[in-house]
Amino acid sequence: MNHQIEKLYRISQQPARRIIGLMSGTSLDGLDIALCTIHNSGTSTQLKLEKFVTMDYTDDFRQFVRRIFAKRQIDQQDLCGLNAYIGLVHAELINKALQDWGIANQDIDIIASHGQTVYHAPQILTHDKTLPNSTLQIGDGDHIAVKTGIITVSDFRQKHIAAGGEGAPLAAYGDYLLFTDDAEHRILLNIGGISNFTFLPTSNSGMKAFATDLGPGNTIMNQYVHKHFGIEMDRDAAIAYQGTVNPTLLKALLAEHFLSLDYPKTTGPELFNLAYLEAKQKETNTLLLPKEDVMATLNAFSAQAIIDGIAAVSANLENVAVYVSGGGLHNPLLMENIKAGLPKMSISSIEDIAMNPDAKEACLFAILANETIAGSSDNVRNIKDSPAICMGKISLPS
Image (tube, rainbow, N blue to C red; front, side, top):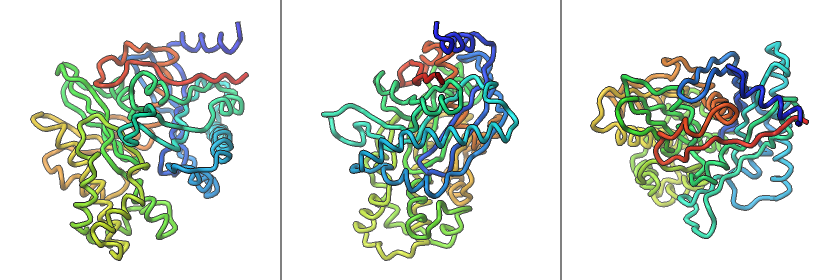
């Protein structure tokens, strides 16, 4: 037997596994690296976050990815080269993190790599029934495995689509296993480039968990300040605080048909982007709006899409708590707007239930890899409109 297959089998039989979860979001801030020790699988899963760091990307890296990110027409050579390049960069960042932590590569069992999303094309977005649901994350797992010497599980979203899903969101799988509670209904809100939440009913309610995208999170705001201010994000909402919400533009932004669709659903920056904003500004004759007012309005737009989604799913329920993670948690104006729109709702950081909010997504991919290596698809059968599957492709170092 191949010695790497033997090693994989031994890892699957261990009472616990050390797994590095990776997440690189659409905001292109950096690579989240979470070193987790995971005991058991299924609803018996216990996760301990040992180490966490976000390794910043270089400006050159961001510019390379932006050549192809969420674009219909690209240079195929860029796509081909970036698949390898991103894998190599991620491997280098993993090796650097482990060196900084004083941990040997051979002491890690598995790497769980989400990859870098470059295009998300479910039929709900494309309106093209001639092609199936599809999504593409690059950053080749074989390159990561070879350069780190660690077995790597990657490309999780393809199995979801192959089994009848849309490739997103995947958060429900890990959230359901880790955070379902006996006493309170939980909404785990993640505000990344796109906002999404997982609804976790109490374990004895008879209701099913589900995850859904809501609409824009940080993506349009980040794109706007990058274009007009030359910065990656509106840190601490410094620009948006200087502006005033334009109600006419806000109403037009909220008129997007996607926002009225039933849950669960999925979207991406292929829809919510600067072209979407420009079209709405033309429609409302607000192209000359001060940039600070545009940012204030975009902030309110993201907040209202989140407010509407949470209000809809929590209607007629008692004892509902919202726990927030993702980059949007650090945007004070966005959080103020959300809390103002849901004044009777308990809203706090997911840190309140023992999870670093910045590490959550990377940890969830570690959970998905753990289920693939040591769990079972039977463990996730109680998630609404999501296929009961184990996800990810396995890359061996040699």
